[in-house]
Length: 509
Image (tube, rainbow, N blue to C red):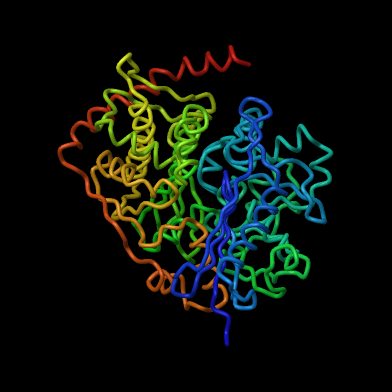
């Protein structure tokens, strides 16, 4: 009998997740494992790629054991990841430096050099996006300038999923959804842009081959089979950035369809038939041929809630351990006791700088409107509302650039919160739908892997068969006008604080 189980693996910012599912999308088992992020200096953010591999081995072993599935029944494997992340490896695929994840913003000097050598307009027209430390190229230039020995010993520059794909198969590659996140890509042709690489003095041979997301790039090796419990010879596709995986999970395969994904960050994902050529938002590739994605991505919305849990939620953590539940659920219950608008409290979710559409390394989180009457519930609700305000800002910027949204889905870990979903619907004044199966980017990985080995004839057919609409959250008219007024205040706060953010960064150096 032909194998028909599909395995999706997502290398996230805070954890690795795995899903084993049937061809129709029915989930047999899922597992996750967290790992730390290191912040050795202000604006630095690093992870150990070996921690990703250890977590991958553990979660894959767990889903195989929990499902009691025969490893030989796995038809294909897909891997997605946080991105862009600089993973420099030698010829053996071993890291030569800690991975600089997307949150890392140490490369401002390299950005200045790129503006001099290339210019913002050239980058926007060829690659799309802006010159910013978020992207890969400035991180790579930092490695070359500050760690020349590591750069010299680098054989290939991978993304996090490419690192796991190599560990599984021994093959070096990068999927084409990641390309625009490098600032070194021709987004229309989906290939490296020599006109961007050469002026920077970078060695193009260190850039891996670019392949379609659903292309089978190799098979699980005997060594990887021993480490994970998989069967040697299982096909592995190139995979994709986690945003693309989330878009597939949400069924975003038609122009104008969109999803918001809230995990560590909140990310707006809009399906388009043309690449994004602007600077305010982010371009990535869509797994379907001929489609592209326009992305509005923040930094630390879910991360802010996690910070609150870790620093101020000791009681909720203890109670959750006693009750056997998630402390986030307990925080959500508290937030629900605070009224819309959090009793006049507004939160700027810039806990580690901010991406679109603010793009400011120095921006920091702010609770605006604190008083002696402010309660813990207000703080939690304000964090949720701040994420929704930022999402609305990105939607408005996308609409102004000609990328209108016809439908909006909600996925990611944040989608498990009914309160947060309703807040987003009210702040945006639009309906939000959830997939019937809200399991994260790993489900999208599994679907694309199935396309790669022919279990589905196309991505569109796969989505039609697997993705079903679940709950829908509609805006509550009695709250939308109040949120409109608060949103206007939210939009005024960052411009009012921009100069102060810069001065604080200079004092804090």
